[in-house]
Image (cartoon, rainbow, N blue to C red):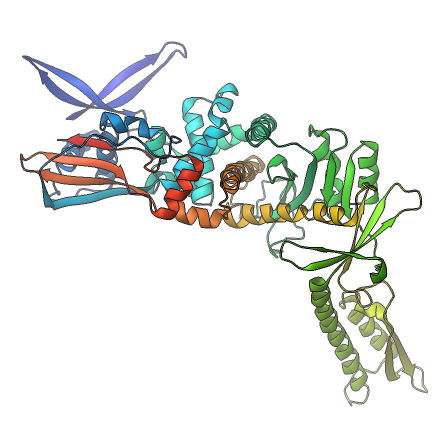
Amino acid sequence: MFIRKTATRNKSANESYVTFRLVASQRTGKQVRQITLLNLGRQFDLPQKDWPRLCARIDALLAGQAGMIPEPEAIEALAQRYAARLIAAHPGPASTAAATQPALAAVPAVPDPVYAEVDIVSLQLTRPRSVGVEAAGLAAMDWLGIDPMLAGLGFNGVQRDAVAGLLIGRMAAPGSELATARWLRERSALGELLGADFEAMPPMRLYRTSDLLVRHRDAIEDALFSRIQDLFGLSVTVTLYDLTNTYFEGTAAENTRAARGRSKEKRADCPLVTLGLVLDSSGFVRRSKMFAGNVAESTTLAEMLKGLAAPKGALIIMDAGIATAANIAWLKEQEYRYLVVSRERGRQFDPDQAVETLTASSETIRLQRVLSEDKQEVRLYCHSAGRETKETAIAARLVTRFETGLATLAAGLSKPRGQKTLAAIQQRIGRLKEKSRGIGQHYEIVVTPDETGKNAAAITWTKTPVEGSMLTHPGVYCLRSSETAWDAATLWHTYTTLTDLEAVFRGLKSELGLRPVFHHTEDRTEGHLFITVLAYQLVQTIRRKLELAGDPVSWTRLREILSVQQRVTATFRQRDGRTLHVRKTTTAEPALRRIYEALGIDASPGGVQKMTV
């Protein structure tokens, strides 16, 4: 075994370059031929003086021999990698060769027995690599036709492999693109399932592929959602819209969209970017877009929906942050229906006019439906006992804090060093109201001056709750809609689909590594967010199939079950002195097998490779 350096010329690109190959001599009859075992590519940078040591170490690994003298880390890592590739590339029994496909029948054909007499003590188990999430991810990509779609957009084979690595890496081990590159090299069997060498793929390939994905964002999102509609028979009737933001680690000085804003993760110390999502009621993403971190939610709606192929009359559901009067007027002008949280401050609720409905958790919600005078809009006043308990507790805490502050000011008037100046007392009361989160409006406060008119002699207050506020109507909120023909229960239950969108954002952040962002440039940041959105589409596809099979499960739990399965190389010394290598996937445990059966995936991804040296 030796390494050959070969000069090659690409005529179409008029380019000359050098490749490296691992070559062995093989005798056929009276002739000796040299055969290429592996193409090591153009980026093989081991110094030539170390080539013989590398080849010797590969031979030793294939023969199941431990090295007498430890090799340098660079040589050992390459030897382990190339030995593993040689074993993985060796065909296994004919009946299991087809098992390398990611999505097949759940019960593969039983292979013919293959017997060998081995020394059990010589057993070595090497190269463990995860395979469960990878198999499920590849199956989802196959169902959605992602590979042919990318090929149609001009992605070459290496780029399509990189896309699979980015998306499935985000599903299995959420993190940055650099963390994904390490996962692909060190922990995953995805390269085996794809026939790709991720250990030879530089991280820059992943970054440039993410740039390419962003460049084709609209085409990819349209094609994916169209395929999802066909796959699950979805009819587009409801559109959910909302935004979230994520923070940067670092200053992100080169990113023009990184800006300080109200962080939903309470990271006011970091610059932010905002992600807007348009979803169908089934939970699949129809459109995504990155905005500046300080963008006003109400200004984004028209920009997102204008490029969306939503049919006239589609129902738009959104929360109060986006449901401004201007946005509702725009929806009416564009002939969209709407169901939104009202931004009106005054609360009202008449229990005698209310009907009851139940939440998914069996909580009773009381609903009062009120039609506008022109009969063009309906308002739904909703009362939740759980929400009332929460708001009552919040109000009690704020009231106690505010009254304690007033009492402290009043007590200070009788202390020798207490603040007594009339102007200063008025100023401190103003600050107290400012920090009271609206509780100050419910109090009439009187500051009585002394005979000089310069100092305060007493502070008294009276609590007078303002009608239509949280103090008088705890647990009440209002929805408004153009659906004047719907009854109260239908309106409320339709609106609750917006909670699915909130669950999507939680999944993107906690399960799929949306936050934080480590990139400094705008394009790379957008790529990171878009990869997360695409990975979510794969996750949602898998979960949807399981739901249809009667086995709903969160992605966190599903990932735990899938990640147990590994591919391992077992190496034995045979009686005849030769070394047997078997590369095989561990047996699926019952919970995992049930998932594979529901998804129609082979329970032993990657099949079996057998090599005797």
